[in-house]
Amino acid sequence: MAKESFRAAVDRLPPRPGVYLMKDPRGRVLYVGKANRLDQRGRNYLQPADALHPRTRKLLQHAEDLDFIVTGSEAEALVLEATLVREHRPYFNVRLKDDKSFPWIRISVGEEVPRLSLTRRVASDGSRYFGPYTDAGALRATLRALRRVFPLRTCADFAAYRRADRPCLNYHVRRCVGPCYSRAAVAPGEYRALVDGLTLFLSGKQEAVRERLAGEMQRAAAQREYERAARLRDQLARLERVAPAQRMAEPGERDADAVGVAWQGQDACAAVLQVRGGRVLGRQTRFLRGAGGSPPADLVSQFAAQHYLRAPAPPAEVWLPEALADAAVLEAALARDGRRVRFKVARRGRARRLVELAQENATLALEAHLASRAGRRGRYQRAVYDLQRALGLAEPPFRVVCFDISNLSGMDAVASVVVAENGRPRRSGYRRMRMRAVGPDDFAMMREAVGRYGAHVAGGEIPRPDLVVVDGGIGQVGAAREALAAAQLGELALVGLAKREETVVFPDGRLLSLPRRGGALRSLQRLRDEAHRFAISYNRKLRGKRTVGSVLDGVPGVGPARRRALLAAFGSVAAVRAAAPEELARRSGVPRPIAERIAAVLREGEAEGGHGGNAA
Image (cartoon, rainbow, N blue to C red; front, side, top):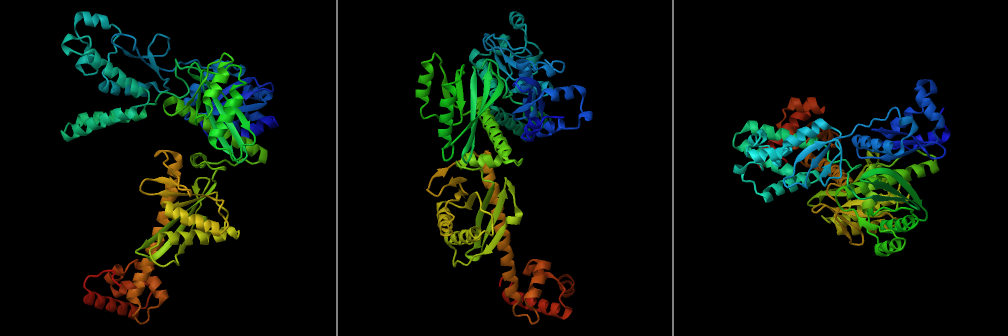
């Protein structure tokens, strides 16, 4: 029943929470819906006609296209859905529209003694509003916890309490400092500090409050006030539960655009989230041609110049992921037309979060465009795009290989190669090798490992990686670069990850410190740690074989096969020595006479060498 163009649009929906807009052939919005997973919700519309509601069948008769905006959570999608329904008033939403207003936190900062309250209506009265919040119960529980940290007044009849010079119950239960009570002696500066602290917390500075509550909980436990410590523990849990102010709406904010850019090879896409009156009202996407080889800053600059010089009504601010080299020139050009626009790099707070969301929307739009052009439906994981942006790669690194070296004073030196495809381990591509280089020379061993692997890649035996990662600093990176050049693979992207500072090292000596909690650094760390684990396990296995072999070499009747059987059954010489002859025979499968001979030889070795355990 659904048109082919609509089916193709459904195939491009990502597996992310967000809002979808169904449009007619003229681009008018027919219906706005939300989903925790857009791709699953879209497939629901492709069911046979007799399985659909009559209203849905009628909607699909008119729907020609499907657009989407991804959000950070389903709660944010709910807020954005309500905003878009009020903005577009789509025909098929009329009977289903829910004008429920979400609760906001209000701090009347314009009053002499500001009041903390909850409201479902935002007014231009000089107060600070935070929200909206979708879980009113969790919000009230958290406010109760916050009032123990920031005990502001909540009473509506403050003047009456001040005239009577009598505090309310909240003062006695320590949920208000009592600015109405003369004996409380609350200085105006002290009260204003509490207001500023709560404002900072609600603006996203929650870590300071968490640390304060955690410290109080520890002190209460140390003083054996276990009930109070338990209450503080519960307050901390409520702080984790409460949703911070939604990214999709914040009243009183100036009109702005949040811009994100994504690129793959010669193709690039810019997405613009339009913030009007503090609310995200829509998304625009623009595709850029001839983007191959351009750094991200140039793509942002080219898009901003071409888009905003033609925009009929640009906003007061444009939030960008990269600084514009010619921002002043572009602002002056727009000012000549009577428009005043400021281009700002979003570094923190809500602006930064919306720019990151715009970048994700640009990534998904570009991927949907390329998938449609190529007739495929596969998608890259978000971690792959994080790596591409962080390292400035021309293409998303779908296949990443990582090298690590493991040895003990040069003995039993091994190398490991682990592979990740689309952000997930590809264990069938793991490799391990014993090093031929002599001595504990990490650089020479890294050169050998990368060179041997690169020879197989150059010969077509192993797929070409999009990114090569080595465990180490500039020395290991330089050795890997030489090996790749010798294998005629010098064009492969190569970086190192230094353990101590977790710094990314490039072949030209540049250092890059990635955000500790960012997806790019975590992807590299997971890959590096997996390579280290794989190398260590192989090194231990070789050392175990060598130790068992050196002790049993002189035992008549024990050759390589029986040594392997003993190692597999017991794992170490100490375990073999501790076993009785009958256990040796039963677990390893060696004949009883040879088991008795092994036990005798090990006992003699222990008597001569003391308690050397694993000594050869």
